[in-house]
Image 1 (cartoon, one colour):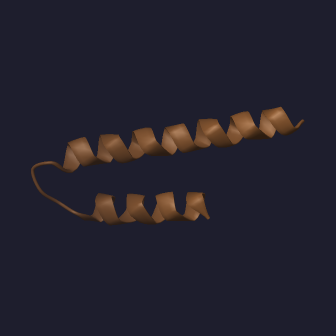
Image 2 (tube, one colour):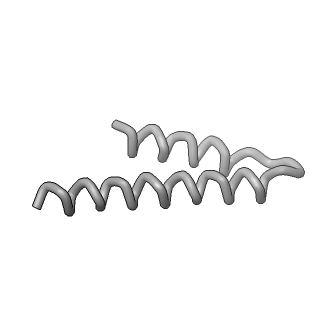
Length: 47
């Protein structure tokens, strides 16, 4: 569910324009990277 939500937010932010677009895109990419690493860490802990 969290992955879906992050994806939704990413699409919303990426489709917006404006002066802060690059900064917002970087923040979204960083959030996705954190979510992916957390998911992989929890998967490694389960193994």
